[in-house]
Image 1 (cartoon, one colour):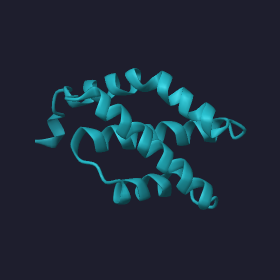
Image 2 (image 1 turned 120 degrees about the horizontal axis):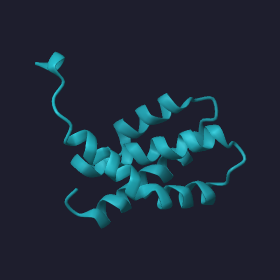
Image 3 (image 1 turned 180 degrees about the vertical axis):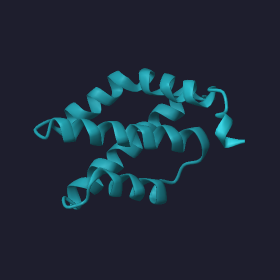
Length: 101
């Protein structure tokens, strides 16, 4: 990741957008919320990928713990950012699957 600070800000922004959208659309499942983030979140490259990962993180967290507050979800995201970014970097550096050739 090129500029880690900007990527982390993008992660917070996308996660916040996902929680707001989920709150306004309670009948939508996580997949629909993520589709909305992919279409509407205005970021490119690493920031977009990290933002989608962050949105997914908070949505899954809130599914597992429905009583968690937005503030707690965002704090958990903040605590997990380095791990999420490490996972993204590992996947970007993974060898190409032989079936993809």
